[in-house]
Length: 211
Image 1: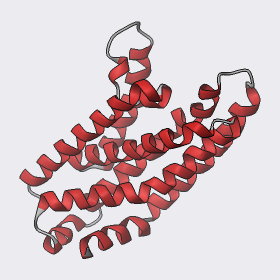
Image 2: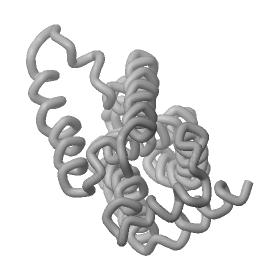
Image 3: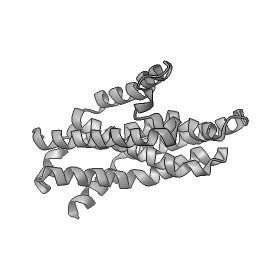
Image 4: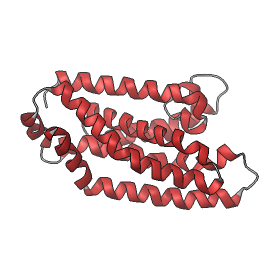
């Protein structure tokens, strides 16, 4: 319980996380109204979810900063391990705490994107997607242990590799982790699978590798 409280306090007091969350929400708000009024004939799902296709970048950065900060800011991970040397339970606590912190931010951001377009029914799915995206990003950053390389890797996958693969007929585009942002019913399983795999890999490396 003390470890969870410490993790929660750490996440809530990181200025970079608060700034990222605020900027992401503000960008979503601007894009949501732009999409809602620019093309009123667009399908409901497209208009409601389109802003998140861009501002999901903020949640990727949020996850990266949350995980990488302990390795880059004076090696805080060493202090954390002294408080809780059992690494796998610590990894679980970190993931659960980050999920708990991200969930309300994701809910507000998702509602900001969906409500102006009249797509309130998409809000729960979008909230879950953004939360899972943050956890996936944190897992990748936990493996890489550096914010900039992790962010470049993830942003490149989501905004360069993904669109290029989707431009080709068939292929593996339907199995990419961001498919749920475009087609929630079909892409939900892919997002969950990618997140679970990333968290498992992060747990394995955290358990076996020196801090």
